[in-house]
Amino acid sequence: AQSVTQPDIHITVSEGASLELRCNYSYGATPYLFWYVQSPGQGLQLLLKYFSGDTLVQGIKGFEAEFKRSQSSFNLRKPSVHWSDAAEYFCAVNSGGGADGLTFGKGTHLIIQP
Amino acid sequence: SAVISQKPSRDICQRGTSLTIQCQVDSQVTMMFWYRQQPGQSLTLIATANQGSEATYESGFVIDKFPISRPNLTFSTLTVSNMSPEDSSIYLCSVEPGQGADTQYFGPGTRLTVL
Image 1 (cartoon, each protein chain N blue to C red):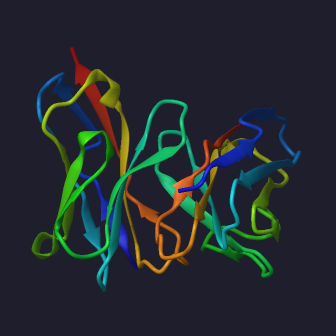
Image 2 (tube, each protein chain N blue to C red; image 1 turned 90 degrees about the horizontal axis):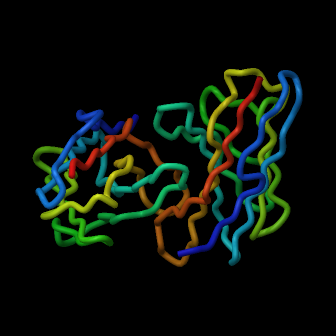
Image 3 (tube, one colour; image 1 turned 90 degrees about the vertical axis):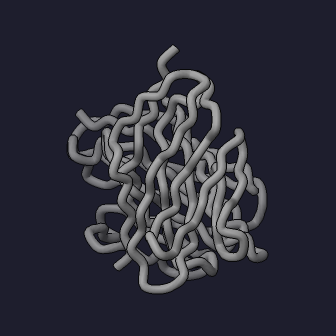
């Protein structure tokens, strides 16, 4: 069975500082990987996704993520965070093909200090 | 992507009653999914709803508790039956637009509180 681990429950970052959120997955084949963001009281917004090809993917809002097969990781990064980035971030995986539901990590709560 | 709406956005219900949540999409989609997000928790897939076939439920979720309808390619409902306080959660629908998108887009969610 596939699984996703986000080891950091909470992360606090100063505004303007860089950010890295960790995600490790367990999956028997080539995974389809996603990062979603959930702002308070909102649904989930897709930040970026990786299916194949270039292992560094760019997303919206200045986020990027790097797929590392050897480490089973898909970490999310942003060079300079803004106060509006405060939210819950979820890493997710599925098998691709459009027919499977997503398996989510437990999420990382990002706090931005002024 | 797709524009997805859900009704109601929130509700407070009494124990033992049922609530039907609606999910409407602005385009025709084959795959729709229903998820539950319990307070402070991550999202868990309840079921997959394809038009023209019975919904497929994940382990731990049963049709009698969470009946799903999918009458056409733009609409689905999830009913939470015989509710208890443990059903207090956010319920989200998502769609996979097809045409090779392989990506799910989520509705805003329905926040349910059961007293």
